[in-house]
Length: 395
Image (cartoon, rainbow, N blue to C red; front, side):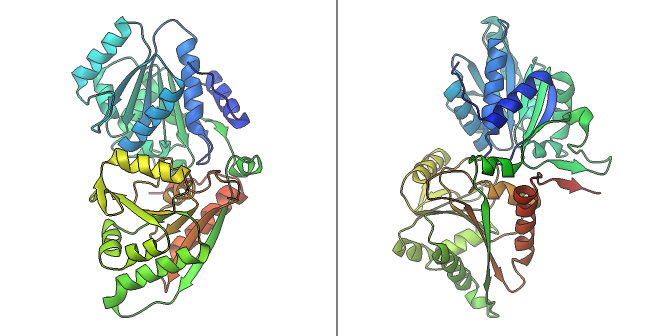
């Protein structure tokens, strides 16, 4: 096991996990909650000679794979199992008997086990009836979803230790729907790190919101050309190098790329482009690539000097770490959780000259007004008041 260096707020979180067997950890996006999980896992693996099984739950396969890579950078000599339908370099299965068999072999060899899964596949582990010592729920606001909650509730009661990590807690005011304000299931908040503190200490950057008003047009024949024009003008206004665009739909992305001169205009400005959706797969500069290659290139470009624009509908909003992003451009509305998570993509520290994360919201007629108001409300709540962006289900 590697010795992990923690920031002060991470040390506080890990200590709280030693004293509480269940609880919520509220950390702003970019605050390093994954390292808290890793440090706690190291503590659990080294405190006893009895093998431990730890389950890490993510909302998406991509994030489960990313979390696995981050854990294994610090934790060596451990068995690894993935329980989801995605491709991985490690053993992977969603078959209950295979999960049970893998766990049995690990226990017989007295080896520690890390299982990476998704909320969608967590019930497979439950059905295997293996003993789970610790569960880390990443992006834990997803755990309240109707389809996922039964397995979450099971492990809240059955696992020895259970922790819920999120920047955006989801509460419920109705007994018919789950909410993280149910302390019997989710535990109390054992650590709450305010965003202004992380900004003050230099661990994340403050966001800067720019609302750009654009004249509307009545002629629908020029809809996509007009969208292309106002996206490019927003890019030109700020001249940043690494830009994330949140599109309304896959259709908007493909039509922007194929029905306008958007790609050519980006090229003249020195930008490469890439996009990823569930329908189109991953595309880099017009070439279809594997998801693994897409994220390898995305992170390489993020770390390097490449100027690029990356478009998506929802895949990159939550959890996925992308180095170096400077600007996010909202072409779609989102709920408060989606907005807060997306802002988190561009407030990570990077180059010394980067002093804020730029949040651009084009407003064309009435389109974009609601998004702009929500973005400003999230920034006020999280970065000025220092409160988490809590989403509330009322009925």
